[in-house]
Length: 292
Length: 171
Image 1: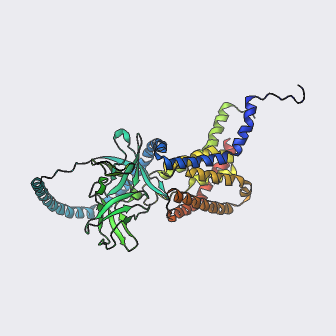
Image 2: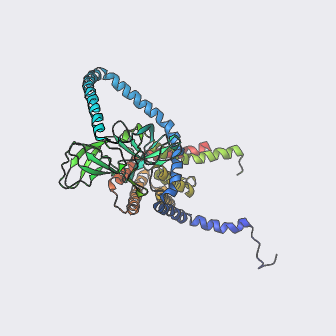
Image 3: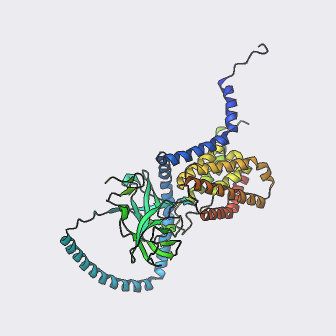
């Protein structure tokens, strides 16, 4: 082999400098790629959403198995606690039962009266709603988001935008749906906005999540009549949430800020109901105002 | 050194163990344990893992793993995808470039350095979120997460230390 004659490189040898260069710049390349994903998510969130739902579908069965002992433990704990308080609870329940019997009689009378009045007014009844029960298996979120994962998804008919509640009150709405899991965006999430009204004063407002336990009531009039301790329920405005679901109670009223304490303890979410709400929302998060 | 196939497989599993533990920690935090009020303030376990293994055994936390870990965390916690990857790689790069200095330091000095660096990372995270949403995010939750992460670091350090010490015996 003469001096100066170039040695023919193999493919492997030719690739080595590129690999070394890539390794050297891998930090910047990876950071640039991460920034690219952030930008793509900002411009077109739906293109990233499927990866997120795949992740949720992957972890939900694991969570479901791991949370079962927690659920059992909580049930046993509650059972033991009930056992110790059984005498006192029984006394309270008897009193409550008597009160409920009276209320039931009044409710039957009111229902009959309502029916007669509806017939007189020829009122078209609102479409009913049905619901599915699911278990919260994951409490996901962070300093800038509040969400939860449930153990059912699109395979049993859960759809994006459905309303989620539990026995205490409004939980949130379905934000993403996978095959066997779904993610709920809680009403405490930064992006959450719920049309509400106060039960006694009848003031309408928008409940804005702030990631804490005390979301703010916004768009209240300056001369508001809202009082501390007053119950806040969904108003049904925009037809996005059914009217009348308990959201919380007014915690503080001041010139700068009026907030509520949510009825639901988001740290202890167990089972939730996914409401199939049959009315078409006037405003959808994706499309803005829907054509009607 | 030529080793037989079962030894290599065993070594692979042992080397993957810290990554597995890290993934498990990230997952465990998201399980609905029904402890009131703790859901949003999980400790930053991924950063703790990158900090510890970045100093003592950087080959166990390769950059691609750090990137995927961040992405997985973002998908799982409904964060903006890419942000954790970006911050974790930035953090990894700082740790790797300073590992010779960090290795010589005592545990308390490392803890302090972790606290300072995770504070800066939380600040950058807050800035990115504020820019992303065009709205200044309340810093209180980020501060709580930073505090809980600093508080938990010694425990995680201890767990990783025991794994690290058991490596020669395992291999």
